[in-house]
Each structure stands twice: as C-alpha cells, then as structure tokens.
Image (cartoon, rainbow, N blue to C red):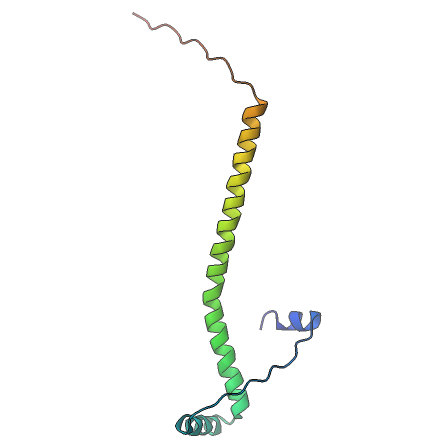
Length: 104
C-alpha cells in the first residue's frame, strides 16, 4: 500500500459500516470458500473489495490524467496567444527589404 500510511498519519480515517444481503446459495458458497482458505467472511470480503477497488481505480487515473493534460494544454495555448499578442504590439513592423535585381 503506497500512501495509506501517509494519509492515516495526516488525517485519521474512521471505519464505515456497510451491510451486504446475499442470497442463500451465494452465502453458502462464500462460507465454504472462507473455511477452505482459513479466513473469516469479513476478512475475505475486505480483501475482495480492496482488489476490486484497486483494479477499477486504475481505469480512473488515465481519465483524470487526460482531463488534466487537456486543461494544461488549453492554459499553455492561451498564454502563448497572449504573449504573441503582446510581442506584436511591442515591436513595430520592420520595413520590407528590397529584393536584389535579377541577373539577365
């Protein structure tokens, strides 16, 4: 876990209670798997939830990065446009140079 210790040291996190209603066949399967693995149902569910959240969270990061990148590019282009406008206002136009005459 990369930043759990950091987050907990900065801001204490409380526990959140959630209830899950399972149908009898699923509850029986869950109990058999937990007995086989030697873990409690609560520990098994916490592990499964943690894995699922991590897997789905990974799909969230590229979306956020894409949105952040678009915002940064938009800001960059605005700044470039502003600075280009300021430079053109600050520098007077140069007179055009005369071309050399062509040899005959």
